[in-house]
Length: 263
Ligand code: PTJ
Image (cartoon, rainbow, N blue to C red):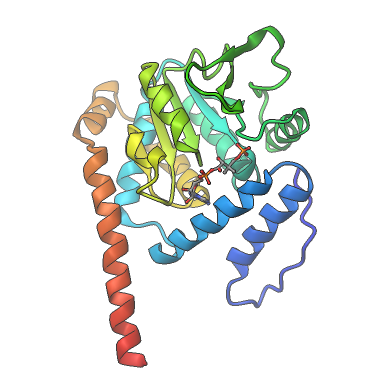
């Protein structure tokens, strides 16, 4: 469990954002989050500010397609890094339960210490099984990747047909696609390599996205296989990425007009 060390005054106008920022900093001190995770979080914050820190309508369509793919998968795996272990561990564990997915720790800045710490965070959040740790003979290597994200679990990402990668750096997404796997990502930056290469890109804050996916999963588990296939067939990731960029640019124009009137 992450110990929250920094007190944030509840009456602060940006309480939630500050609380989250300090959770990431505390997570770094406790060797859960990588140092670069702070920079990645800051980049995400900037994009979320443009979204107005709310889920736009297009993201709900992306999230629905993502859940449909997870529910139809034979071996779905949720890949967990340091940032998401701090931001939404319970949501990830529950999503894994609802979609029969496995949880696997997969790190860019992989150390044994961080692996074990993230495993503990997930177990504290209710996970019964965590792959990607204590690998031994189960360690497999993804071809073409030279950094440590290449190390995957034989029973997890290696075998998976669908991999959910909340918060990612792009090159693995491309290689996973080349290996014939479907990739679902969450990235507030719709222009990142991960966003462009994923089968389904959710352009939303990972905490909001995973929470909403839990409700969507409750809804979609009541649907037939054919209905889930229809959701996926109708889905066009490229169109939705364009919608997300349009949403952001419209927001910026509206903000500029407001500023002009008020200023
Ligand atoms: O824990 P590790 O060792 O696996 O390392 C994880 C990090 C995040 C450091 C590593 O994957 C990394 O360097 O990622 P990047 O290349 O900085 O990409 C992170 C992407 O996530 C950026 O495009 C950010 O805009 C986006 N992002 C950051 N915070 C959020 C986010 N997207 C959704 N929700 C967020 N809260």
